[in-house]
Amino acid sequence: MKFPNGFLSFIFLAASAAALASCAGRESEWPTRSWRTSTLEAQGIDPGKVAEALDIIRKNDTGIHSLLIVRNGYLVSENYFQGYDKNRLADLYSVTKSVVSTLIGMGIDRGQIASVDVPFTDILNYDSFRNPDPRKRSITIGNLLTMTSGLGWVEGDQAYWSMMSASDPIAYVMGLPLIAKPGTVFNYDSGAVHILSSLIRRSTGMESADFARNFLFEPLGIKRFEWQKDRNGISIGGWGLRLTPRDMAKLGYLVLRGGEWDGKRIVSRAWLDVAAAPRVPDFGNPDGLGYGYLWWVYPAVDGFAALGLDGQTILVIPKKNLVVVTTASTPDHGHKAIFPLLSLYIVPAAR
Image (cartoon, rainbow, N blue to C red; front, side, top):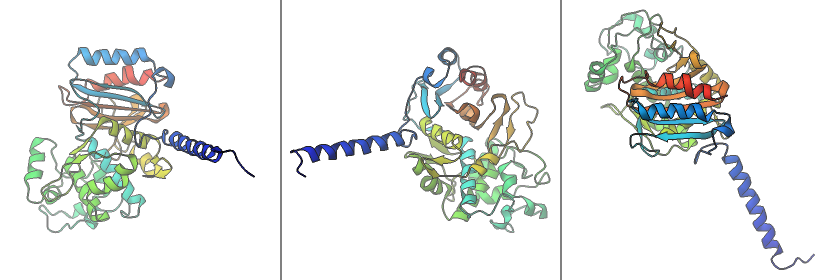
């Protein structure tokens, strides 16, 4: 059969266009290259309540630098304040801990870490550290993940300085005296999470930063990040990661989607389910926060969050298909100004 001149070229171009459209449509479901955007109204969010929150931020000394809202996979609101913008890397502080939790889960998924029940001394040499105590041999990876190791860490600048200035920061933390039976008392402990980062290196043969780059960040399209290391080259577990707010939202969206990204399993849903479940009580604080595996559980909004000093937040609310991100430098160095904005305005706005 003989076709008119140009007919085959037309068919080729049409097929190519259809293929590209199909790929684009598929990729648009995932923000690997960029977030797809939509309006608040189209994704079932009350724009009036969001406007109220933004007005509070602008008129008060909240210290908030960015507020991003993702609903149904769409970036529906993105606002920056005080001269900040979407390209600026933010200091995540203790949000880093929740990333370390994800890396531990990935190591378990890959068979490189046996389980959370393994004593950390089975992986790291115990005998060369100060304050030997046979009970330290019962401290498990799970105890480190829930801040219940029993080690006598006192959170604050002095502890950070002491750890970072030590010739062996891991030895410094492991050498702290044991002040409680492992698994019985919650004590917020950035040093314990640095031990976890060292466990990642020992178990996977890769620094936490490199393990994250290869198996977490690159699949999500996260190209730019910084991660501070200690003097021995170990990525700091308790803090030190820097990301853009949009990439923080990608991490939240990964967790919201149960650890899957564009048809690829990054971390198991089973791990995320246990990591975001309350494993430590609410401590009687007014916000009712509980603690999982380095994730804060936030019953007031039926969600969980990665929280960092000065108001860094990745809030995930699965029932509302919602992710909220803030970066900040708050006057109280915490979330006193941020929690009310989330619980009274942003979350209720999502119908």
